[in-house]
Length: 223
Image (tube, rainbow, N blue to C red; front, side, top):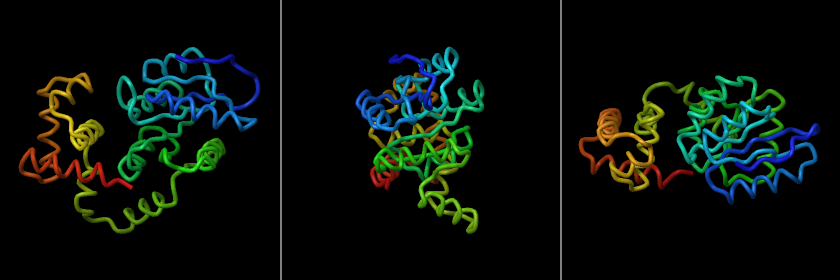
């Protein structure tokens, strides 16, 4: 855990990301803003919750993939412990799959990691002002989804996956085998296989090979 002296001025920020380079780069970027101070940089859920219990962050920036679990789970834990703490999710994962989920879990915004630096500070200030931050593309997509209703094909089916199923779906798309997914998520192979079966039913695919193809194409064609 990387902590700094608690200051009395500026927004005290907690960053949770499993990539040290991202932690360092984001901290340097935000340090240019006179009213923003990165006080804590950690890589996982346990460390992040330790900070929340021992200190009082003013703002949290959370990734979806963490060293000891999913950022969605961390968001839920933070929201249960400190519901007033605003959370921005920054991730490489497609916002069309995760934006709605993180908002329902308790976050106030979603930003892709490839976004321009000005969007990061803009997102923080927007959320601090009490508003939700999403890209214009995501706002339009959510509005279209509400207006259109009905069946959105494979995208709609993927959206119907539970959080655990979506996590496993993404790992399948990354080429991991059942045993590797089980080890990564600290679950049994049987549990992973049960989730895979549910995913196949929801996506209406008949074989593990077809599931792997759909997952690969979707994961590698995110935009």
